[in-house]
Each structure stands twice: as structure tokens, then as C-alpha cells.
Image (cartoon, rainbow, N blue to C red; front, side, top):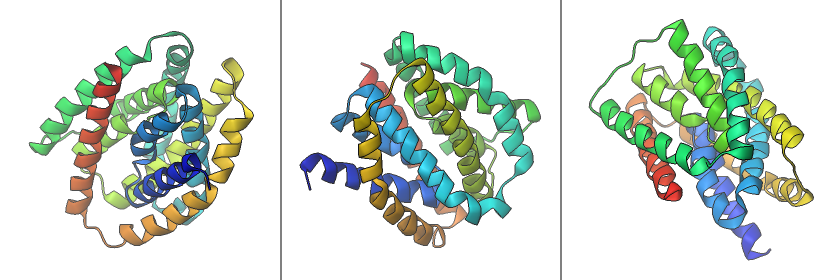
Length: 239
């Protein structure tokens, strides 16, 4: 096994186990480390392909826990964000987007830790879907808007995990189609993704075990750590 493949395996195991246990984490943790191994556009597409596979594996077992009203609102809001994001991905300086998002994530995370709460509305649900769509096609990281909003709204961890995974399956699939249609892909992306599948399945199994053992309080603490990590990563990589 080559050193590059071994690193890919380790990244995918950790990221997929975190995603399975919390509903977040694959892109947030995986993308920064994938960028150490692959060029920007290849890392983004590998992340998206593996995220689609992970959500596809999980969706049947969690289908009864999904908040379908919330899911529909997220999906309704996503097309505008997806379209805006693909232009950023193809033509604009993603560093500025990453810097802005990183700073906002860090500020809002500090507010959440200070017990800031968010009251859910239909408009906020839809707007969150739009922001998530924008970050999916532009930098391959849809999680921060969902994580911030749902944590502030104190949504139950089971509903949160299931609904976000279902949304990811939709938004990642559309994002991949758009990136291939308007951009490009190559065989290395698909071969690397295929080789990483065993690591992804192992991560899913580990994540399911962890999910059964964590309380809502621990879940929130993990959420804050993920958000802080994401904010710092986005700021550092944009400078």
C-alpha cells in the first residue's frame, strides 16, 4: 500500500466515523487533509463522491428519524446556493469565501458556547439550505451553516444526524453533477474514491457504535470542537 493510499484510508476512517456518529464531519475533517494529498479540485470531488456513498449507505437505516418538513425546506433553499457556488468554484477566488466563512463560524461558535439560542422558522430553514448549497459547490463543505443553525436551535441529535445525512445525499449529488458538467473530472478522482470505500465502510461501523454511547451534552461539545476546527482551518488556508 502506497503512503498516499494509507493517508487516504486514515482520513476516510476518521471522517466517516465522525459523520456517522454526529451527522457532520466528513467534509469538515476530511477536506483539509485531502487537500494535503490531492490538488484542490480533485480533493473536493473525492470528498463529494465519498460523502454520497456514505449517505447512501446510511439513508435506509435512518429514514424513520428524518424530519421531512425540515428536509424539504433545506432542499427548497439549496438551488440558489448551488448555482452561486459553482461560479465561485469555477471562476472566483475561493480564498476570500473561505476567510469570510471561517471568521463567521468562529464568532458564531463562541456565541453558541455562550448559550445563544436560535428560534427556528420556515424562512431560516430555507435560508440555511441555501447557504449550505453555496458552500457545497464552492468549497465542498456544506456543514457549517447546518451545524450552527441546528446547534443554536437545540435540535435532538438523532433528528439532526438523520436529516442532515438525507440533505447531504441530495445536495452532494447535485453538486457533483454540476461540477462535472461545468468543470471537469478525471480517472484518478474515481479510482482514489473507489480505493477508499473499504475505509469508509469501516468508519461507518465505528461511528454507529459511538453514536449509541454519546449523550446530547457530549454531542453538543463535539459539535463545538468541529466548528472551531472548521473556522480555524478556513481562516488559515485562506491566508
